[in-house]
Image (cartoon, rainbow, N blue to C red; front, side, top):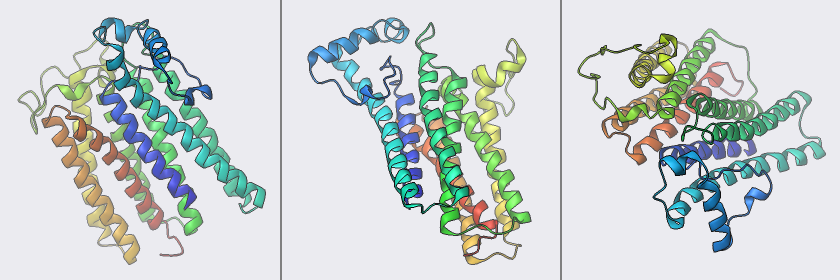
Length: 329
């Protein structure tokens, strides 16, 4: 239950991160203070000092020079909460972990997995600051590569937390053909989610806001028209969005095929329910994705779409675990 609770906190963290990104609040704090950063501004002098720090960086100078101190507060608080929640996750993970170690209630294999998770959490904090640094130099925006890496590492941590938690709840049995298919589908789902990171990273969702056609065509003119062409899937707005669209369609079709094939397998009721949850999650996510696009990334839909990606990843992780022949099935 402890690990599942931490996984839920990671889910909330991703939602807060998506909100921070979509409101362009992530560059409002220009220092990384892992310990003293938990103390918020206490008076107007503190606010003025932070505002003056922010005013020295490209985002303020090129985009937000109109902001007053009061305007600055609105973006500061969101990034502050984002960072504070990350620290809270570390505490909620580490304190019980130390308690379980002291009680010697964790077996050797699980202990090393948990140490690995703790290290990944620390790396995620460092990755977050590495991402912010990319927006404090010349370009008033974070690198889409670092943003996607930050999001990807969050998904890895979320999957690992759930997997170790499931293993405590119901030890895994022998890997099956169905579980191998599940792992392949999970990899595709994560890959599709990461392609969405590049869409968010360059704000590609604010263009070509029609569906199913894109610029009036299924395969629009201008794809991969970028120099060099091999960077187009990561830096060209049209190509980045087109890639994400078709990866999402492929994922949707593959989930339906997976669910249909699962109907022919000799599954337990719990395993069958797991495949149905994946189908429901992918239908919800596709609906959110199309709605987000057509709304030109309306904030609530954009955040819900990012949350939906984590829900789908979680549902698929659960399905893979169930299909691995867990002994409680």
